[in-house]
Amino acid sequence: MDTKGHLVVLGYGDVGKSIVNELSEGPFRFVVVDSDEKVFENVEFEHLVGNGADEEILVTAGVKSASFVFVALNDDTNVIFATLISRGLNPGATIVARANSVKSIDKIYKAGADYVGSLSIVAGQMLAKMSANCIGKACRIDEDIMLYEGIEIEKHHIEKGSFLDNKSIEDLDLEKDIGCTVIGIERGGLVTININKQTVLRAGDTIAVGGSSKQISEFKEKYLD
Image 1 (cartoon, rainbow, N blue to C red):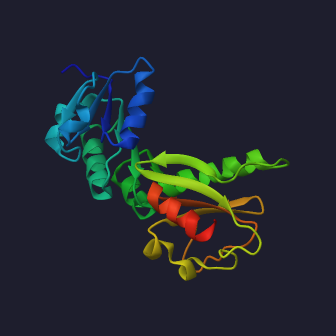
Image 2: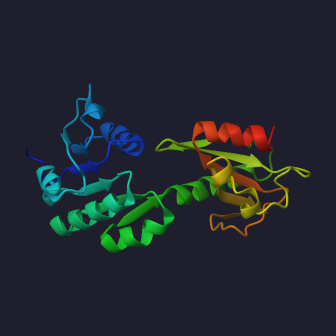
């Protein structure tokens, strides 16, 4: 296939689909790789069925001559290998990778990525944007921020007297109890995504909670309704 200067998208989950939707709006030539042939039913763009972390597949997709490589795989081990192999095949390509876990960001950069995006970073950015938009005016806070690879992120305000007030992340243990996670906090105009078990929630905080739609609903029912 003639793919010189094209773009390669590794992974056609929700993140990969979002990338393709954007690319489809422009004059870009791209090839999408995914191991599940079913995801390519009824699509018209150029694609390849195979493991995006396999060197032979990457060569076939034309990574050696690609201008951009988007790594949107669901497993960080595969993301690291795909990034490492892509960088070896094409030292001049721009590689943008998705980190499923914040802990993997440094490893993905070391593997050769130029840019790495993660759920927590995106949540922090969205909280910062939300805070700026709410300064000096009332804003609706109980709303969906975004959908990221099957994970819904909603922001909620903690009112005075709420069960969440003065509770630490360890006290709540949301991951074990429900499965969702507090991934960002806006407090006094400042946003943080550096959250650990000792982090204490306070009345007045606006929190970003990430999880499946079912988990988010259970969280709201149990702690907010």
